[in-house]
Amino acid sequence: MKLFLLKPVLFFSLFFLLTGPWVAFCSQTAEKVKKKVDSSIATRQKTQKQLDRWEQQKAGLVAEYEQLKQQQELLAAANVELITQAKAHRLALDELMARKEANLKIQKEMLPFLKEVYAALEEMVLNDAPFLREERRNRLQKLALLMDDVDISIAEKYRKVMEALCVEAEYGNTIEVTQDKIELSGSEVLADIFRLGRISLFALTLDQQSAGVFNVAENRWDALSKEHLQSVAAAVEMGKKQRTVEVMSLPIGQLAN
Image (cartoon, rainbow, N blue to C red; front, side, top):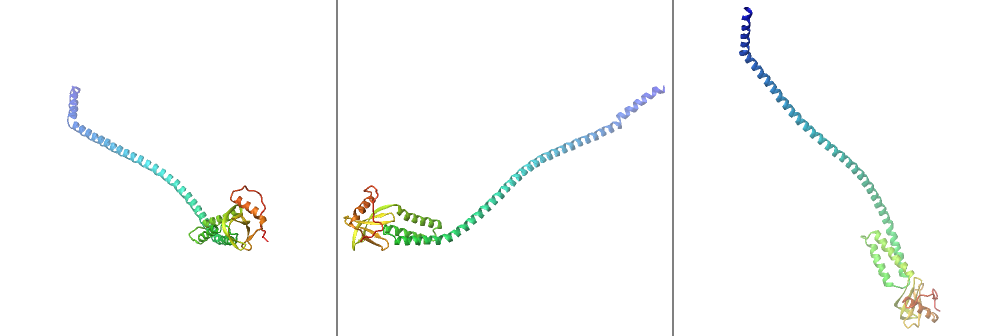
């Protein structure tokens, strides 16, 4: 009987607990748990987003670092190249300065030498046999003006002096015939002048009746004897290319009686 009454009492007690304040308590607890879970999820999601942003920033910073590192390596290589070029430029500059000093020294020594050569050349032409006098004197005059011109380089002056020397030297390897008035045997006559290199000058009057040889020591024309007319005439023809070149006997250095 007591056991039978106890069961309804327990049933009503459980029913009261489940349908009463207990239900409200459980509901509030569940709501609090749900809020905490939602908050935790939201926090985790927020944290994950922050981590994602940090990962993106990290990746960007790593890429920027690698780029900057590569640029630094390129700049370091360029710096080494610039240093090498600077050293090469300094060496080249030192070499140029040394050359400049050497050139200045050469110029100081070369100009007096060239003037001495010109003076010797001028004296030789003035005292030489009278062939191509106007051409040679004009060359000397132009050379004198060039030597006095401060705007002309030493190299150009040297070239012109050597050129004049070569022209004078070349006269020793050639023959030619020109016409000129000369004083022969006390009379002025028009004659063919045969130049035999730089050795001798021979004259043959246009009528081929008189011949002469230039006396460099006395600076005058000396008459030749009649026996030399034929050889002088042959030399004049060869100089005019009217006759083939052949060996002949000329009175070089001989004076007429």
